[in-house]
Length: 306
Image 1: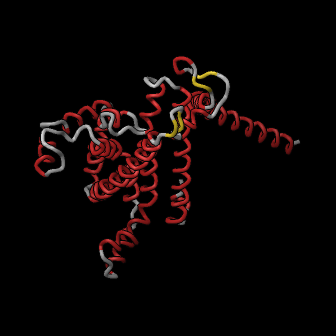
Image 2: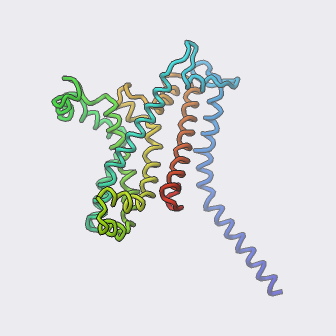
Image 3: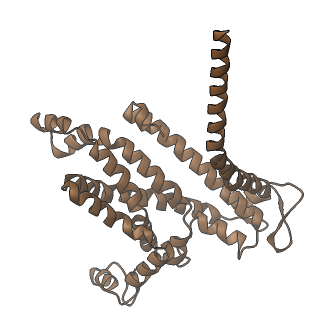
């Protein structure tokens, strides 16, 4: 009798915990399904439809959008879309590498400051991202326009012709991407530097390792989790960026995000835009898979696996 009452009590406890877990997870799960899963499924369906009047999708199902995305049109093959894809990959790779180069010394310097100053330093890194991205991009447009000190300096050094500015250009797009995504790399690296085992660094220095070898063998493996996390936070949104290439590129540095947006607006070809969005999703999954493999190969531990 006592055993049966204990069993019933445990069953009620398990049911109560399950209900509590269900009510806790349900809002987030519903949000993901409504605002992520369903739009993605709709986008996939639109990508395989035919482009109808005014760019709206219609039946029958076809692969025309993916063929056009690959450059095949009624006038033959054109590499324009492939150039846009390659430009997006190159800008993303270049911006990510530059962000890493800039973020590493910043994150290390913050960890060497006094504890009372660290929060202020991190706040200075994060505060610019509180401003709307469009406003920050317009600020760079004013800084890089013709007649500004930066443009005059570039003209004096011979980087640009006279009476020209650093904007619009691919350089301006890269600079805007680095500035915009720098906090997303500094914060994960700072968290990794805070856990840094200085004994390994001192051991490498005691063994007369050069600064570069000390960094590669003692610092880099310990900060790899932060580096991989920051790379994901930078590379994925940079690959689909729209605002910065549109404003700072001035039509000269169009990326895949601009191609997709134009098809839903001025281009009036929803299926082609949806196909481009699917390509961005595929590239994102490939990037995450690659980062996971790199984390396992370089780190050798689960803490660096994404």
